[in-house]
Length: 358
Image 1: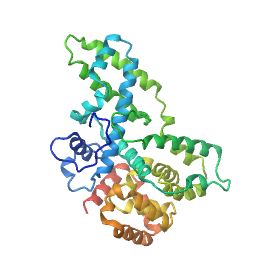
Image 2: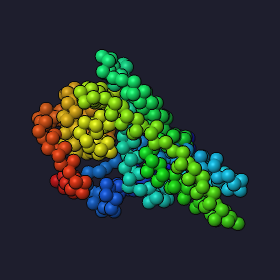
Image 3: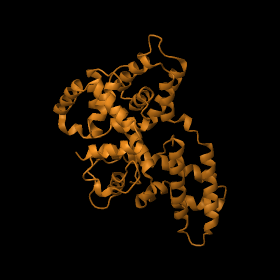
Image 4: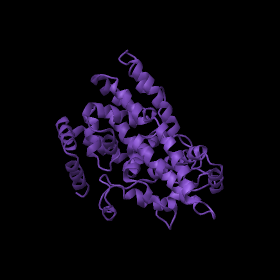
């Protein structure tokens, strides 16, 4: 991650020992059950596209910047404050480049989904007003939905801000991921302070830990985008959810679509997002069919998701082939896929691994 106030680079990764290459390798190791299966990565189609990797780096850096600043404001010890200042702004996001193992598979998985949502919004250039509002023009909506959707839109705008690695980003994460990232930043700051001669390490640990606990105690995951999307979906009846699912895709609002699909299918939100950005077509085909998405909107979804799943390399021919497959993909097949995904978690994971090596 560069210290410069420059847009994130999107060049091919893996050359030399650049931070992006190290992060890319760490991301490849992210598997659902958290076991180190990196040696299987070449056989499993889990490739991170350059655009998705760049977006993930942007979100990780921005949230680490914000947490680092907040810890510095709450340490309550002038000596420790001075040491943190001497480390330089953005120390944690630079230090993580050498200690990527601090990032848990669960946190990386969440960052991947978050980055996918943001990338669609960033790339969207559809004209006109939001279809997710227009779909409720008939009065089918309610105040809870409108309020949550408005707040979700604000959160999404923050996610698609200019990609500057030294800029702060609000860490609007679910609680468990916020805790994980906050303690990661705290550990890096403590290790950085230990480099200074004459430091009493216990004092730094105590002050930074206390500040981090204060941040965690005040974190409100209910104002995060994932929670707001769920609030939107749960405020609506089933028929309205189906209509809005298509509208959400027209608006490139992948998170809203995923929340609507979660409420309708019972599939967890994270699983819906993973399915939509999977390199295999069947998960997307099944979810689109289950949400009663028409051919035109399915084409729109495939076009939006192409930079995330490698379909963009196939050009228009790949998009046409996807729609042809979608027309042949029946509701019965979609229900069968959902039954498999809704079974015991361990079984679903094993079946997904088998599908990836076929």
